[in-house]
Structure formats: structure tokens, C-alpha cells
Length: 31
Image 1: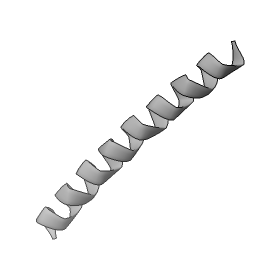
Image 2 (image 1 turned 120 degrees about the vertical axis):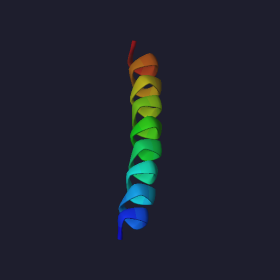
Image 3 (image 1 turned 60 degrees about the horizontal axis):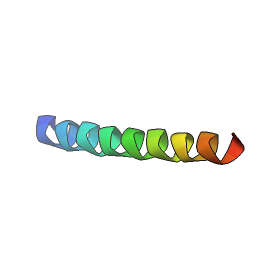
Image 4 (image 1 turned 60 degrees about the vertical axis):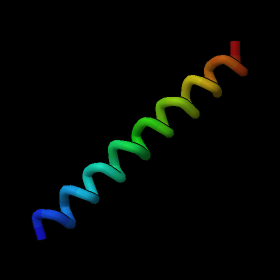
């Protein structure tokens, strides 16, 4: 259970990073 949630948090972190990058890209395109 702990291992699963640990992996889950890692995946979430990675997706958050991707979200941030895509957000930055959108901002660049808008300006």
C-alpha cells in the first residue's frame, strides 16, 4: 500500500511538471 501511494505521488509529481511546462508554453504563445 505504501509503495503504491509512493509511486502514485511520483506519477502525480511528473504530471504536475508536465502541466507547468504546457502552461508556460501557452503563455509564451499568447504573448
